[in-house]
Image (tube, rainbow, N blue to C red; front, side, top):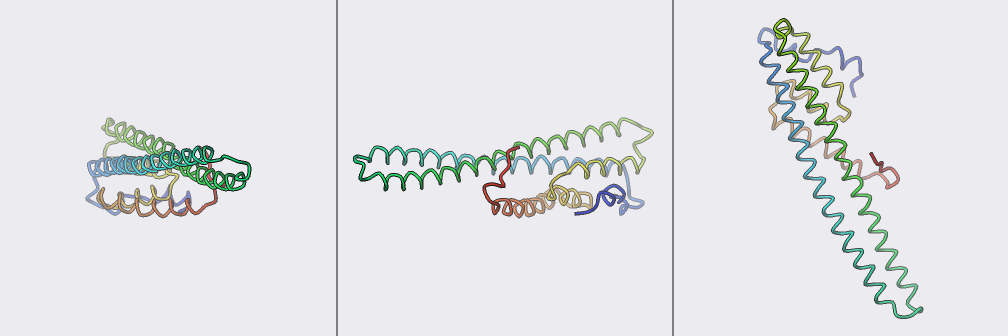
Length: 197
């Protein structure tokens, strides 16, 4: 991960040279906003699918436990009953943990949309000032503020690619690749490491 010093001092648009313009900077920041919104929609769909699956499985395990209770007719079957119920409750706990993880997408979406709102507000403010509109350092300051607001590595990588001219589609593919890797690493963690937001 780049240091905070590198983040705040590295010019992002210096490669444009004489072709630099505030129109290009505006379009770039709009592309970034589109990427943030698109990735939020994609993540929310993925997380809702996980939640739907988890709650469907929880209902199924609950019915199985009820069936085991109804099947218990004598104390001699108690040990087998305990074994079956223990297995079902363990599966239920696993599904609950998956649901908790999936619910965390609300926090990520809230943060991401806040970044979009802040970026668009800063861009609008700059565009409303004729004396600043063609001031390259002012645009670089906005870009640095936006980049420094990101907490996820996948977001920073997507940002860097957009700033260097990637299309929205390319940036989203890069983001999704890194987000999927991070998601896989999270799923490998133990249940004790799942945090509520």
